[in-house]
Length: 407
Image (cartoon, rainbow, N blue to C red; front, top):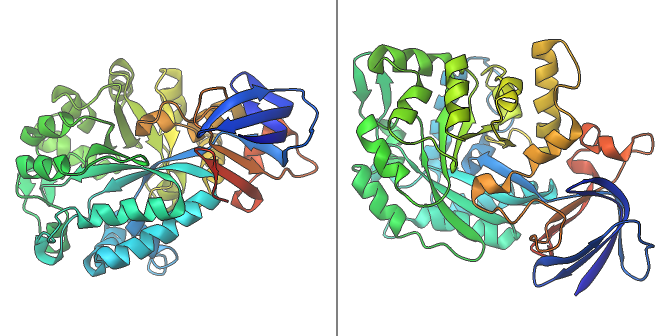
């Protein structure tokens, strides 16, 4: 057993001073507040539950600081992303993912959600092991010491126009399988392990035709989908299907309590109602949504409709989950003209959304929960309860994952 004493700790019923945390076999076995420090490892500042980075693409990390010179849009940025995807192989993917996950670990992340669609070799030719790229991600997470939820992503079409679905072209062939059954068969060969769960993802309504959606939804585990990130996605879906993307996904059984919709930037009022009715969660990625000029999503309306919110770093334009949480509030301030749309309790809840990745026993400092924590130094002028508004990755000094000290 290992014993820690936290100067302040964020417990399920609020912030508490002088908290003793006992850890054995990867779980918290004792959590007591208002205790003297005693002979144990001291954690200065504020101790929070470990963070969940619910949505990310490890290979996008290579784009950081390389896509701004010519301005452009999401669609022009996508061409730079394709250029990176064209160059990677399992070895270089392992190196890049390891670096990405190391940065996330230093930011307090204990569970990574990897929205994985870079599956095959050049031209879409499978590697000898058809899941070689997924295994590189598993190895990277193991090396760093974070848990991984691999959301194997179905990607079957090159886009959608008012006339229908387009074939995969160029580097997109690396993303696609022959058909939904071939995708499902490959995913079935991905074995979960102690530190990795396997889930599924619909890349988007642009990349997965409706007749394939039920096949993806049938895979056991967490289910994620890019949803309404761009107005163009909504427009073409309405033009071809006569439905918004949310309506189309609901019609084909994709939305449920195990589903997380990513971005949700351009939702209608009816879309919000559908997400609430189906108990679908929504993951915001504020740094990417700002970087790609996507827009500001209706986070407050979703919260008010009782939709569970989580956070991701998506393209890893920065590795700072505390900043992602802070920007969830800051973007709503810009959109609404008022402060305090989200309070610190709600932001910590969004930062610790492990259930969206299939780890419901993580994200809480309580007896029986997975022994994840992130300890951050506190600015001397700040109130401990407002740590999420002032702390950053630079303030993180200790991270535990399943009781193992990885930072």
